[in-house]
Length: 156
Image (cartoon, rainbow, N blue to C red; front, side):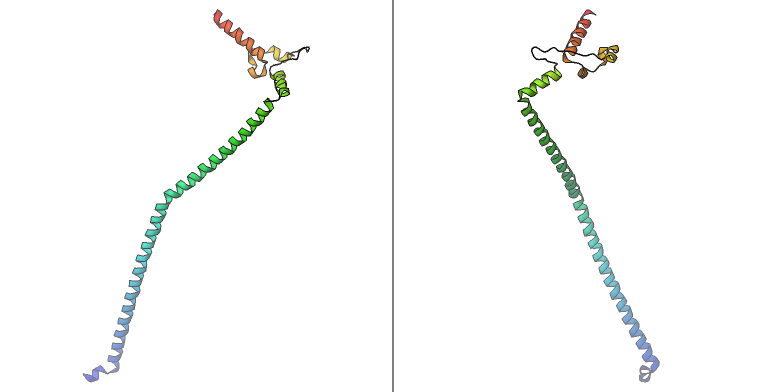
């Protein structure tokens, strides 16, 4: 039996078994490492997904609020521009010459000693006066049209 133990065939068989055991153990270790890495990777993926889900709504709110801020800034700039225009208009309205010019253009006023003329376009005369827009006619024409239409309604 002692001889069996030291025979070449026995030695090779033992060496093969030992090698097979080492290979089996190393494979088990690799698989254990792989499963640990897979577990770590799964945990990391879970943490990343949780962060994405947790930050998605606040990020959407942030982007939405940034667009609202930009819109409010645009509206404030437009309001400042409009205030400047109104200040300019107020300054012009303080000037008597500007007021006279507006009265002459829009109200068809004339200065004492001047003769006012109203030129009627023959093409427009063929159309009814009511076809013209109220802004295209002088103010006194609109006034008389209002009086005429009120009188006409009372007669019916």
